[in-house]
Amino acid sequence: MKYHSIAIDGPAASGKSTVAKNLAKTLNYIYIDTGAMYRATTYKAISLGIDLEDQNAYDFLNNTEFVFKDGELYMDNLNMSVLNRLKAVANNVSLVASHKPVRNKLVELQQAIAKQSNVVMDGRDIGTVVLKDADLKIFMIASVEVRAERRFNELNKLGLKHTQTLSELIEDIQRRDDYDSSRAYNPLRQAEDAELIDTSDISIGEVTGLLYEKYISKLKGEI
Ligand code: DC
Image 1 (cartoon, rainbow, N blue to C red):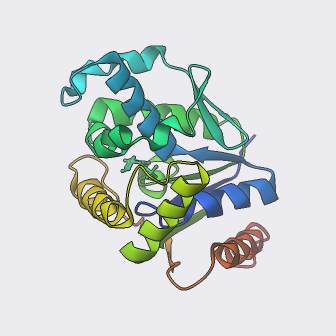
Image 2 (image 1 turned 120 degrees about the vertical axis):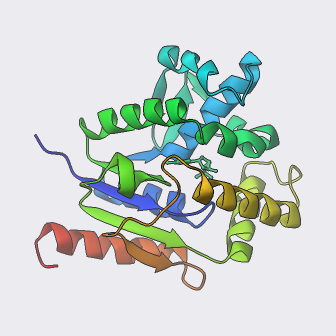
């Protein structure tokens, strides 16, 4: 059986996770937040005390379980929602995600999930690497100020608003965008067949509605 998939890529805090989560809920698809997998890997690497720079030190991924339940990631049965937002994780995740062995392992896991279920997947390389045949590919962008504000509100909701100020978030987002776009292996890039959506001036709710309609028309063969 061929399962359906939607790929949503874009820079940090462009609104892709919220849109992906809402779309998945509406369509009854599984939401896969691939950024959460890179963050959780970073959390585990820090906990184990490995040399984060050493790309060969990530063998622990062969004995690590990633499970998505209701849009939340559990790593080795540990709910990662709050742990993934820790500053130490944010500061190191781009480095960890630049390692080829880490990317190859996580991409393999992501593709295995998409072979078994309908998915909405968000990340940086979903349209270009993970789901090259996705039914719909979106590349979502927004101004850095709008994105920092969204991340700030997200942290607020998780009770973590004191971990980073707005200007620290702007710096962090810019630094990660530069790093993610310029890394040698599978950088953040818009797929040729992905549609560009700027969410600076439209609400996330509106974007979700727009994409839902686009996707349904596409499945019906109307576009
Ligand atoms: O979406 P996010 O901010 O939670 O992602 C965290 C980091 O993980 C981001 O800086 C880049 C990396 N990432 C990646 O390289 N490839 C993906 N598919 C998803 C995330």
